[in-house]
Image 1: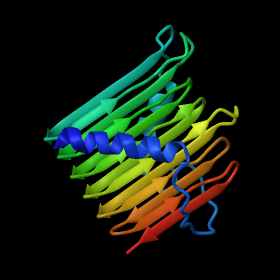
Image 2: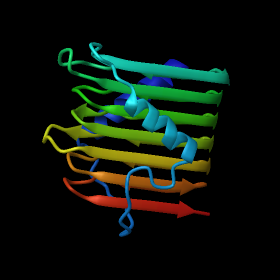
Image 3: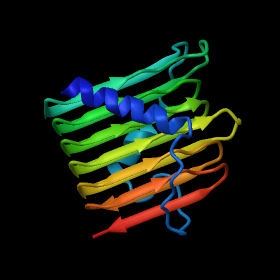
Length: 203
């Protein structure tokens, strides 16, 4: 069951990252990367950013505590010794699933899960992209795509609190997007280059 969930997340992430999902539901509020993300999680991301991989192609870290039946997968592809991809998964709870892809160089990804039955996927093709998924609650699903070969930095973040939240994002070079949810919300974004979108939902 866990393996099937992980495969589903991976396939969904790939599906979104190549731009096959064309629906868009978004607010007109302009926001920024890491908006409404818990301060401790932001610090985790900043610490990951500051880590020097030196002559290593990729750096990855998995931190699991007080957890059962959870799965964490990190797959990183390098284009040489300058790849410098960094990824971290932090899990606390039960039956959570986390997946991070990353192809290219200078990509940073963090998944932080605290709760139960949460599923998260990141993706990231290209270079110089940042992505973060923070889940605090139960039965949340978050998927981030990203394809960035344009040379522009791209940053996507999803912060979910409460239960039953669902969010999807695609994105491309130059994006700076954030989704913040608080219980039983739904959001879909397919962003074109240089868009800045923020969604804040609360019940």
